[in-house]
Image 1 (cartoon, one colour):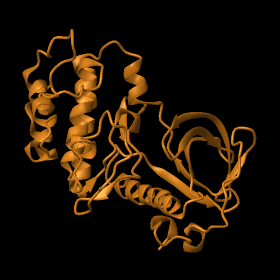
Image 2 (image 1 turned 180 degrees about the horizontal axis):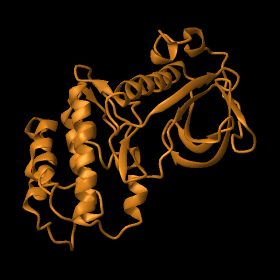
Image 3 (image 1 turned 30 degrees about the vertical axis):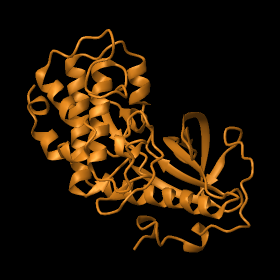
Image 4 (image 1 turned 90 degrees about the vertical axis):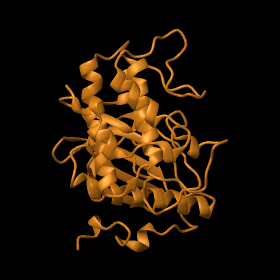
Length: 294
């Protein structure tokens, strides 16, 4: 088996945290960087997360545009270092698995770990911009635009459902637009199988389900957490602001009228509820009249 297809066993000695590893300052934008024997030139930073930064770059051998995520994997605290490395390996495994079955998952081309700098790298396909940036540039979406994006989100929801995976960090920042208004999901560091519990989430709190946020935090989380996030993104595309934090959550923002589409409103009413057991599953979203009708 190609070791790159199974990151949990790939080059184990290189991916185990070692106290001797230290993060060294590296200016990736000033010179070519060698990642797994390939040289890359970095253009600009396009995203920053709690544990990583993403750069637009290109591979020097063929000028192929790519996105490169850089994750500091070595820290002063061994527990934190182990957690960061787990996120790194988890993202690779989950994304590679799902990308083989759906065109709505960002593809990972390669990955590597630099022992000299303590940095991990994930080489991915490069999109145009994330959904949050796209929405922030618009005053409103047309009904057709909104529904086109929504149907792709439901496709992603079905993919996760079929593979029994919880993403747990679905937000407009992690949805990337590609040519032809194709939407793809990335950042699988938090993803879990259905039966695995999650006691803490590090995603965007604006789009996290209540059970992942205090004061509603629960030790065991289900796939219904992602259903909330999909509903929250639909709310964002409808009213151009994220959901507020006062129940009922589906209500429009102050000084805005409620949507006049009863089917759209029905999805918001069913997905943005505090009790996860009261939320529908991905199959319900896929068969809902709002999703199916033109």
